[in-house]
Image (cartoon, rainbow, N blue to C red; front, side, top):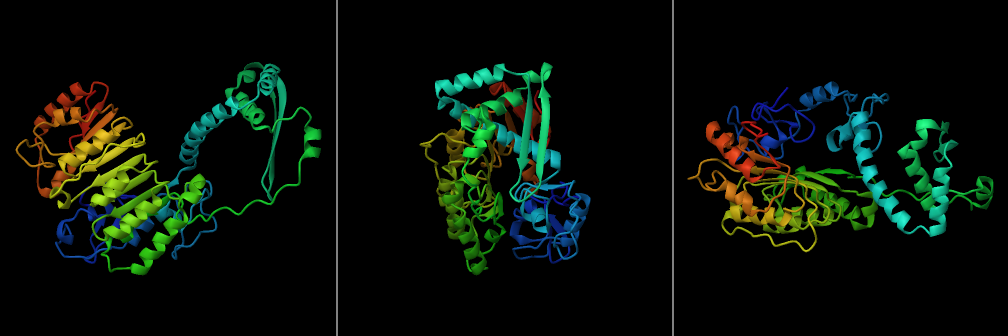
Length: 437
């Protein structure tokens, strides 16, 4: 099952199936780029927003193993061993399949593990720096005392307990994970030579604090931004308030980390308010047709790691904004930029060049065509950005929407020039798919 426009398979994010009034379907990504709001198959007009093709979504849910009933409520079984919602940290429900990141259990655990390992390495390093010399000496003695028998009990508040006991000897005595656990316990002050005495000295357990609200955690699909300023005003006000409620005071919980479906030109003032409220915690953002104020704000977001900026109109070409240098180091590692003026694109890449690892740059091949449909000095343009990236993808698939076909032989030659200019970088074209190795 695939979108008839881009031919990519349907999914629950960018390629989510949308049902037009004429009963044809296109994916969410192609929908935002259709000229004049006309169906690409029968040319009949439609108005935004466009609802999901619910029949297709149900098929996707069935294929992906998310068991939902016909009303969209929780299925009692929910295939507990098959899927995991990264947003709720629980087996997925109907709402999870639409708004959250749903993964297979092993993929979910692997993704969480990467985040945990980075934080654990940082936290352990900081804890050791603050550890007194005597405590550090005792910890080294404890590590030298292996082999030993280890016992651990994990008991959830008001829930079941899990216990484990194992003998650490032989090759297991060099277990790096066990040693890291011992250092962490010692550095945190939770390890005591006299467990019974430590238990007697422990104060009564404090009542657990209520967790912050979990609405909008991790992912926010801002499809409301595709409507004009006067449309769905109450819903917009409610959404903005939710984002504000999960602002800087909840940074430790990283409430709004990912925002998709943002359309900037329909109601720019409201979109600016939402982006400003989410800026402190936002890590991933996908926005179509941003205005100048959106660019300036997004450009300086303190935690942004993945950013997609694309324009299908030429509103910014009248007075192209030049983005300033950043006061703080950039955190953007993955960037997809297309349709912005050349000067804006250049200033954006220069500002984020030190942190960028992957760049998708939408630009045509014909040297006589106006940017971004063509670029006569693409190699020099990339060199001016000062990039030190490991992957560069030249985006040309989007040209098909304008009836433009690029010459694959010329494209291959240009990719080879780019590869020579960036010797440690993998260079390819998303249409030709010709990696240079």
